[in-house]
Length: 281
Image (cartoon, rainbow, N blue to C red; front, side):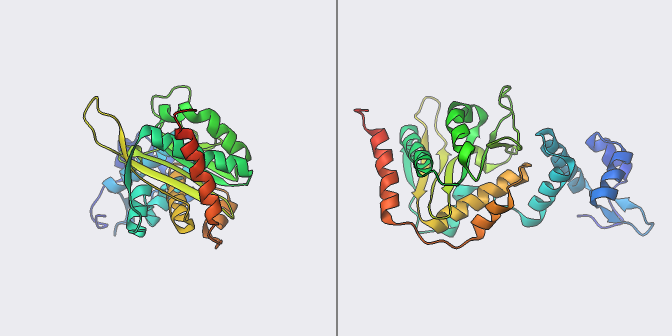
């Protein structure tokens, strides 16, 4: 950020963000935002970075969040630098994971197997998903409404712009969270379920293809609890940065130590996936 002798006044900040100086001063008095830097004259000075932060707050508010929640989510993202790609985080943290390329049919089967196992177990799980675009989520909304009904908490992230009957709503169940324009999650397909005793993750990113070619995804699937926890933390962070508020018990679950589930649990899930791929069905 520029030094206190540089930058511009709160009036310029207001003009560039479509607000008024009075509104921005009210925000500053109530929430300490936007902070800017104080010049030797005693006046606060602002920069392009402050313009971007105010615009991010307005974007989060437009999705339905309160002003306080919007400011807190933007500030948290700025301070913590939340990882914004599940797939990149897993590849970096777990180099032994071996990505494989699958088509859409295999990923649908694996996703449904993870979701169905969570429903069959009737456990209070955290259920999270990334859908690239809002209309992709719309096809699965009936399943995710049922998952959210008994979940500890549920959230999905996607680009919901243009989905008129299904806009972003971080207060919904599942919480529907709008991804920023530059988010790498816009090309990712992710499903995560996490309970006190079990968990699973499917994480994939769409490989660029030529028009007319089949869609291909580089994917990892795992029931290894550290991998599931890492994926869940990224998705919760992305959802909260978009205005959702995860309950305290979700944070407790993400921080808790739990035993690795038995191989039988993993077998049940992947057998479900194979059954869904059976051409006889």
